[in-house]
Every structure is written in C-alpha cells, then in structure tokens.
Amino acid sequence: MKDRTIIPLLGFVKFSGLPLKAFYMRPKFYHMDPAKKGHRLPKSCIVMSNHTSLWDFPLYLGAFYFQTIHFVMGEVLFRRGKLFGWFLYSLGGIYVDRDQHSFNFVRDCLQYLDKGKRVGIFPQGRLPVNGRFFPYMPGVTVLALKTDAPIIPLYTDGNYGLFKPVRIMIGEPIYIRDLTDQEEPDGMEIKRLTRVLEEKTLEMKAELERRLSEGK
Image (tube, rainbow, N blue to C red; front, side, top):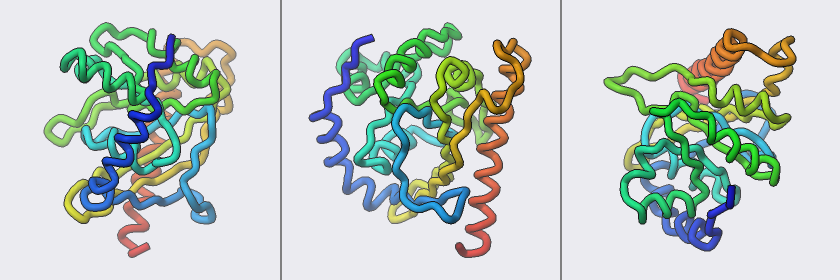
C-alpha cells in the first residue's frame, strides 16, 4: 500500500482547525495513571477509542497536533465523492469496507505500523443510534494479534459544543498477547479478547466520570 498522506495538506488542515479546537472542542487530557502528564503517543502503536460523533476525527487530529494518527475510516466517508475520498487519503485515512466484513484494512494498517507510524481505530465501527452504542468489533483484536504494537486506549466523552471541554482519558498500553494463552487464538478467544478491550474502555469511562464528580 502506498502512503498517500500529503504532509503539507495535513499540516494546513491542522493549522486551519485551531479556531475550531479553541472554541468548539477544547480537549482536556486525563490519564488512568494520575502520575502521568502530557499526551505524547508512542510510535508504532494502535490508538483505540470509543466513537461518539463525526467530530471525533477532527478532535484527535487537533488534540494530537504534532503527531499523525492514520485512522481507519468507513466506506461511507470515502464514497462521498472522488475529491473527498482523495482528501481523506491525503490526511492519512485507511479505507475499510464494513459491509463486506473484510479484513483487508489490517494489511494496510500493518504496513503503517511497520514504518513506525500510529494507526487509529474506532472499534465500534459505527456512530451511536438513538443513544445506543454498538459493541466493539474484532478488527482491533486481529490487528493487535498480528503485531507487537501496543494498544493505546482512549476514551472521549464527546462533550462537543461552544466553549465546552471535550475530555480525553488516556489508558495504559495494552499488549494483547499478555491477555491470552493461545498462540493462535480461535474465533471464540478473539471474541473474548475484544470484550476485554471494550471493558477497558468502560473502566476509563467510569474513572473519568468519578473524577469529574469529585471536581478533579
């Protein structure tokens, strides 16, 4: 897979989005480990986050301003016209066809990771419908099993709005091989591991809500 990211365009989009970041989605970072500060992501990592809104893409684009995350994006976005599809590729987007239940995107992700780059995944795959969130899908687990790259879990409360802070909780790195005894996990084990990753996100959600309730 050829990297079609256009760095000058990516830089321009990030720079032009600064007013949006300042007034509409003002990211505020938290860590599961309170002793940690900053939000520098390691190279060759899988960034895993819950999905609340289409604003999640520009949120992470701006919140990790000096870092590039190549996000897996659904086919519906790329099919909004050739120019828009080119634009998403140019920002580092990775195409996935969810309707075909294809894991071809894993190959593309692995190529990015092999080059020391960061890959981002929203495992829910779809935005919430009528307030109902979809469960995590196994793509992130399959990708993690095929590489030694750590999963960096993120949780955002999606608190988008004028002058509102959008909170981002950063969890501890997860090495998927540490969570299983199977050398080649079967379908049931992959399903279990995916649920474990989902539970990690729910733990981050609960911890963020606890701190906010305590005024921290």
